[in-house]
Image (cartoon, rainbow, N blue to C red; front, side):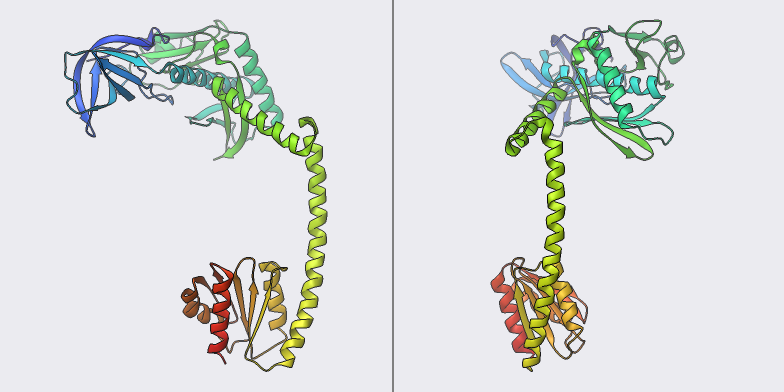
Length: 409
């Protein structure tokens, strides 16, 4: 049986009373097929409608809708326990209009932006995904990447068409060949009836594409189309954007964050780029000075460590610091071990509870870590001449160092 799909003739109708003609169980819940329905089933890149189904004083959620082909039945998946509904029962179907309208805005906006890339640059849309946080389309330009200027031009072009409040119509054809009477942007042959969504009017519509989704009756209802970014993807341009209410919500959130950042910098939002550039220069300068200071400290520490080592004849030498980073300590350890022999060096970075082991080969550093670190809540590994162990806290690290020192006495 074919379900009468009300959204095809009136995408603004949100409710209908209908008869259940079939029921099946889906994971312990009822799925119902009805004679007529306002629910759009998932397809064409557009999520299905959600809503409710009511019978008397009983009301259940319709969590999703699915069909068996464009002319087949529409199944409404509910949260009603299996056995709740039966064929012949009269029910009232109602969609979540806010969700439907957002999908309509996003779907038509996607058509229009894809059409803009096609009209302006000859780009072909070869991928479409309507996600929760954004929409993506993959525009194929034969390997060429879109420039920032082209993205801005396309966004301006599509929004001018949105604000022109062009008419949007759906034209049905008995077969694919008949649909070619319209200037369809992307020709995809298939069997059965074809619906073509036209933005604007003949003889030069803004866009014309085969689609089975729901769309507003005019472009002004899309509100706006906002491009977020464009990234290379398999030789194509993956464009991230959104439309209508979702785009407005994103812009409001971004604007709020920008205002907050400007407030923290005590400047206007328009002054942020220059302030960030100055901060970047300052940070770069500080990093250079820090590297010079770290080099100076490392050299001084190397001299002091070698003096201490030469005063003692112990097989293990332990050193700890919270000034040098782990990477800087690693360089220091290699420098010291290169001028000593016969000793195991334990260099501890107290801020990260990391112990670095160095040896000229007599003590096997990697083996020591592997056999002993876990007993002190540590983990790590390495080679015979150097290894690393990371601990949960400083106390565990020092206990490990003390145990290794006693072991090699």
